[in-house]
Image (cartoon, rainbow, N blue to C red):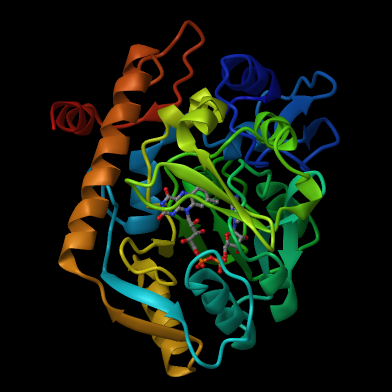
Length: 372
Ligand SMILES: Cc1cc2nc3c(=O)[nH]c(=O)nc-3n(C[C@H](O)[C@H](O)[C@H](O)COP(=O)(O)OP(=O)(O)OC[C@H]3O[C@@H](n4cnc5c(N)ncnc54)[C@H](O)[C@@H]3O)c2cc1C
């Protein structure tokens, strides 16, 4: 993996509008900060190579290296990545009550992992009056506090950096596809440090087509409602085409077309819809409210799902084939669109004058994706 320094991170990622604000460069040093979704560098730094660049999911992400490291095979461009098992799932009868985005599968898996000592803490996304906040959760109550989706891009990985510096391990990490890519890249030890020890024991990715810019969304909503009344949000599956804001006693439904301008351009360059580098991935289950789609990708994921089911924290059903077909089509469409957009901007393999790509992918795989 090619690793440069903070100067290149600012020049090639921030100034090209590629930063998604995932938090991977925040909290490593005093220089990078995230405020209301925007990551900035306070002062210049002359390091030639930095952890900030090494973990960035928008700088020199070599998918073949990530695949060989985490999947022990070359990258093949499968739109949903490796899927060992797929389930319809929801929290089981032993799960404490909570307010979940879908079936509460993410929270149930985490509570089981904590209970069994498989992880000491989880890196999650909570919220306060300023928006989504990075959290280190080491008790089931904290996992429940972080449940539900915040549809704005979040600096979650700042909490990962804090946990690593505080030597908290083993860790579970929950995040969007860009965040899962950052963690997968970081875990390949791109700086080739002899003392590197991987603190991550579990990764759970959520499905994501795009996130929203926090400041733009909040200004838009502030004109229509009292922000302090917002309990949660939902984007029901197509053809609904709306954002539903839950205000407790009432809900407000807003056309998605009015919200879509708040999608950062960098989300349109992301090829991953289902968080392919995670151990398990979770999304909504179309046609069955209150249930999730659960994709199991690794042996660790299999063991966790089986253990959580046996413990009564998770309930699974077979997932209808038609749901998987539809999910596969959506993932393929996102992947192809992103590859076309990256290609157009010269960010795919091709180097700009400084030689930085967003993504490095074997040329035959690029061809097969663009021609699919
Ligand atoms: C920005 C975004 C876009 C999404 N788009 C889709 C989609 O297109 N299709 C689909 O099927 N599903 C999508 N999801 C996933 C979906 O909303 C649920 O998160 C998922 O189904 C898990 O549900 P659950 O009931 O198991 O989650 P819960 O048990 O309620 O747990 C939710 C978990 O998500 C984490 N989280 C919340 N907000 C964020 C955030 N902004 N960034 C990182 N982690 C976060 C929390 O830490 C929490 O652990 C999206 C999620 C997000 C955050």
